[in-house]
Image (cartoon, rainbow, N blue to C red):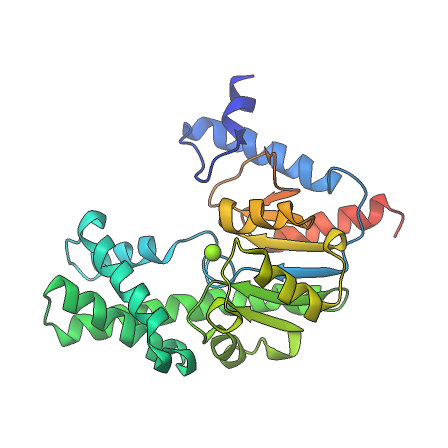
Amino acid sequence: MAAARRCDVSTDMPRERPPGAAWRCAARLDRALRRGFGSPVQVDGILFDYGGTLDGPASHWLDRFVALYAAAGVDMPIGRLKPAFYAADEAAYGDAAVADMSLAELMDFHVAVQHARLGLDDAALRRRLADDFVAGTTAALAASRSVLERLARTHRLGVVSNFYGNVERILADAGFAPLLAVVADSNRVGASKPDRRIFDHALAALGTAPARTLHVGDSHERDVRAAKSLGLRTAWLVPQPLARDEYADLVITDLRELETGLTAEAQRRGG
Ligand SMILES: [Mg+2]
């Protein structure tokens, strides 16, 4: 029972659990995936979040930057970086030029604002942080694209992202364009998750019914709870295995697990 309680979550962040419980959670997740969804469902379309979902499994950009500063030998506590990070985030949302930037240009911009706020003047460090962020993202996007290439054979796919206006550019540069029927970027749509308008925009373009559409994301509030409230099916991407969540139809640690869950569902329906 203790292990079961540790695997159950209803909050944004996974609870800490002793390492010995991890395998029990993983086994429960495997069983849940083999069962597929909680009730029979046909999934025609899949919408993906971008940040922390397609560009890295359940890894927030702020946490990624903390790790990159450490890797560069710079002691940067999260409490010091956080205001500078969100200043860069705010600046990117507010600067029209960002809406057309490539990933590399965006990260140059983002790191430059961070350092201006931090009072740092180190061009080599700026270069390293931006380059390392781009390298990590590029690798993660390539892995995600291979999953989406397989899912696109049987499903309509799209992206719903709270972003700066350039997520479609970034995805196109990474080879996603032929796979996606819609890319809904909050800065272009004029509404951000959890606002239903950005989901409605994506669903209209995807042409699938909410009950037959699966939304995949790493934010419990903006992805899972928002999509669930609109009648979509939901998959929550988390950093460590969890057995279940009351709002998520699937809980996954890797996008490849979607294929397992959807295949199990199709077999359950006799497909
Ligand atoms: Mg996200």
